Amino acid sequence: MPVGEWSRPYVVCPVCGHAFRSTHASTYVTVGREADLCPKIPGRPSDGARLIRSAVTMCPVCSFAAGEAFDDLDLTFDERHGIEKRLKEDGLLKVFRKGQPPWLGFHAAEVCGKERSLKARELGDLCLRASWVCRKEKERPFESTFQLRALRHFMRSLQEEDLVGRELSVTTYLVGELNRRLGNHREALNWYVNAGRTTEGDPRAAWLDRLIDRQSKLAREQAA
Ligand SMILES: [Zn+2]
Image (cartoon, rainbow, N blue to C red; front, top):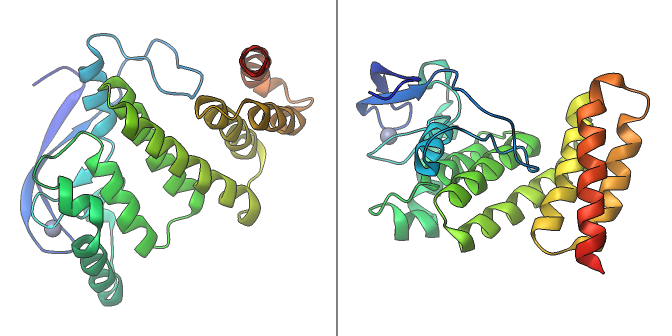
């Protein structure tokens, strides 16, 4: 087993009751982050992708997936029923369940997360991680698909959820950075400005201020 991973004997799917072995990453070594906060992990990109992927567990039988440990989930009867229905009807799962592409667990966790009423911030986070895995695995069209989904969840989060402090700053910044990556450079610039306003005077956000400066410069060049 590669370093940084450990296996738990069995987990039990809270939706279909299937018991299976699952691998979880413990803390892993990173050497900084890319501008969309994707961790840089030493070794081959596919090894990094595997470590990022292990943040979600997916049942191999019904495709139920979540970022939380399955033991900690206490689903109601209605939630279970709703999740089963969504998993059966989901278009991407119908097409890709057999092939198990590297982003599938995050997609399934997003589908299930909607039924479990996860916050938009959390749904966005699942999609952002999916886009990181796609980039490391060179799945370009899916990288953009998940960036766009993350962007939409983060926008909704900023509108509807009372984010404060670091979460507010980082989410606002990510809306800028995802717009930039999707080619919306002017939109990106506006969001970097908004993000800068949320960090004003906070010395703990100095790293984010530096990132905002650097990425704004890049977006201005790209917009020209
Ligand atoms: Zn299951």
